[in-house]
Image (cartoon, rainbow, N blue to C red):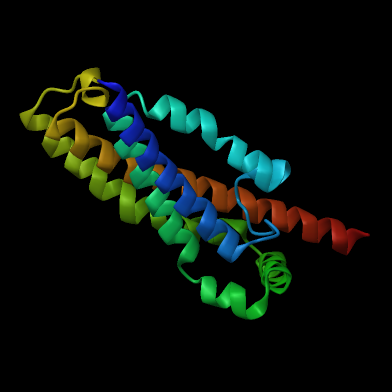
Length: 188
């Protein structure tokens, strides 16, 4: 790869990460609803600084550029989805509504089952794609690095798969944290 390709890859990744940060800021400017614990603790400046190594490292591989961009785009779409309610209620009131709702659920497994939707919607179809995909093409770790259409398709489906797993886990952990906060408040 030449320098121009690194630059283009860096710009594509930067654009994707910018969209994610912008959507996050639109929904939760105080980071009350941020499910990424590290970003919530570091704040906006720390969260932005965390993007720099991702942009630099991702720029070296076309396939990872595609992966990071698609993943960022999915996070952006997820963040914007339903943001009208958060904006209408306000960040704190929406968080309190979630805390109140989580505290009233008698079986936490019901929350876990409901939060599994992204996993079911995105992971299962992508696993089927991979199953049929690798029936015709033998799996090789080169699929992560090659600059072929096959590698790009794989990385797009992998980004969707990864998004669904991370999103499901982070949402469940976030709700567990809210439930613990409510339990502490109720016990005090």
